[in-house]
Every structure is written in C-alpha cells, then in structure tokens.
Amino acid sequence: MCPTCKTTLDMSTSPIAARMKTFIRVRIAAGDSAEQIKAQLVAQFGPAILAEPPKRGFDLLAWLLPLAALAVGIVVVGGLAWTWSRRRDSGAEAREPDLDPDLERRVDEELARYED
Image: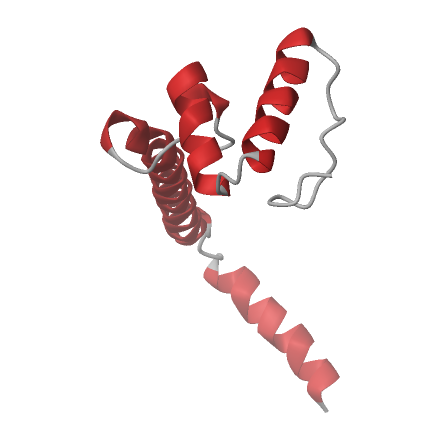
C-alpha cells in the first residue's frame, strides 16, 4: 500500500511499472515526500507520467480546448434551435388560408347552434 496515495501499488505488472514501484518504495523508505517523488518521476519519465497535464504553458490547451469546444457547441445548437423555432412560427402564419366568406358564415352558424 502506498502511504501517500492510499492505494495499492499492484495495479500493473509491466516491467516499467515494477521499476516505478521499486523506485517509489525506495524513495519512501529514504524519507522523500510525495511531491519530491513526483518531481523525480516527472524528471525521469516526463510530464506524460502525470494523471493530468500541468495547467500552464502549452499544456493548458488540454484544459481549455474541451471547454471551448463545449461552449461553441452550446452556441451553435442554441442558434440553430432559435432559428428553427423562428422559421416554424413565421411559416405557420403564412400557411394559414383565408376562408371563403360564405363558408365562414356557415361555420359560424353551425358553431352558434352548439353554444346554446
């Protein structure tokens, strides 16, 4: 069990994972802090070893691009929905035919019979 991360270290059995586990155990026994061990692993394997990219420099794009894509998607879907609803409303008014005056009078007479 890793005392700093409170998880078991037996998740992977690959040679590199075994080497990393041994390194971590040795550094813990030497009294290094979790941050020191993390910094040494990043120095040895690069920032790809981290579960999340750093929030600075070029790596900041990994955080910002998904948020920007989500915002653009919301704007596009909202705009399309607004356009579709406006077109639908105006189209309903334009398609409503006028009744023939004689037919409209007959409909009114029939409706009047049921109102009493």
